[in-house]
Image 1: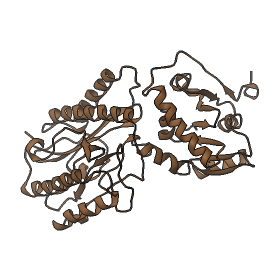
Image 2 (image 1 turned 90 degrees about the vertical axis):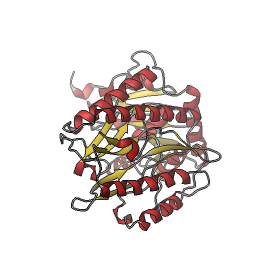
Image 3 (image 1 turned 120 degrees about the horizontal axis):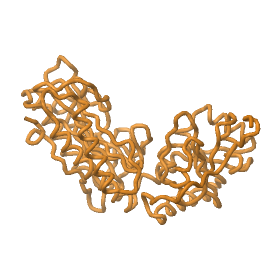
Length: 405
């Protein structure tokens, strides 16, 4: 049979539904909030395409690999649209609705699948912060009679306040990050390459995730462990560089639980720290401690940033600050999107409220040739509550614990 006669779409109901990350009631409540927004804005159909929103509303984390993925929601239907390369796995994960698979036999089959789920002439909401201009153009050609509006910003607002089930999962993740951090701490020694230290942390976290969530998928947990000059960037990759005595070190443990990313980040030193390094480290720790005190309901993100800036400025090191002071947590990763409206930065005026989850993570970086050169970063995760915030990170920070002999 030639490709001309092969189907554009198929279904693959292969196997039983898996045990979901969250209860069906939790997923139904998320879907209900989305449909309430749709009704209020006269939206006929929502097409979600991002990793984070598809996962948030369906408990399915896709692997793009050059293919499009979607979740189509109307007031009556709910369908994930996935590529044939994934077989029945998306069907098994989808707890609330249908899964439609598009094949590779014809170009544009993803949009053919959408045409079977969305009527032309509808008011369609898409994620403007995720969909490319090329895809938007194809959508307009596919649905020439439709009107398009944004759903990226409204769904971000929905995700910013976590449910009790989400917070419980994030707390497990923080505990598991601490386990990874201890494994990294134990693996540090002069002469050991970065990748060996990172592997120790990753293995410890994956094994604990498997024990805690025996029905979950194990994917994407990782450690960035940096030494010396490699600490200058927050997201610098692991290398084969070997640890030297006196090196500044950066521990970054990221357990991933069903698309929910959690982090632990710490500054450390191998065997000893110079006086210049200790002074800068203590300054960053002072800012970190004050940041932990400032996170509470009713406070604006920008006000936290401004106050912490003043501490760095008082020591004449504000010019070495590299990014904002923290961000939200939830369904995100190094390639997922985060809730950009919930970052502790000067340009974000979001007011903190109970059940938001944010990090405090000040970082300064001094380039080579400057006394105390390197990148310094501490990172804790806090759950905002009615009266303040609960710090769910337990791994110690500062010179008393993290100069590794």
